[in-house]
Image (cartoon, rainbow, N blue to C red; front, side):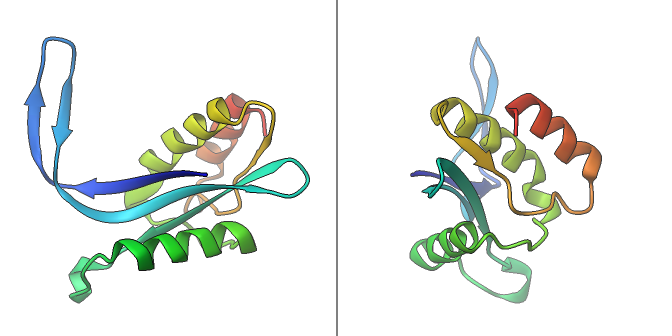
Length: 122
């Protein structure tokens, strides 16, 4: 199982090789769960800070795993699309012998979904 926490904010750190963002608060979770029939399903969770919610690591993890196992078709939040695409590529390289099952919709953007599926080979 792969788990990646999504962060927002933080400080920019510039190195000779690349610019990167370090720190920031956790706002969401992406998970890849090995599933039957030689597949890996991906789930997600995002905290709604604007509604006054506070990120709970275990609760977010449970929601993401549940969405992955049940194959939830809940559209992914717009703010997670870029990171989700990178995560799908990471999962496909980690689980080379398994098919990656992207169950969520990339927020009604079939063009992006097709590009990711072509690169991953879904």
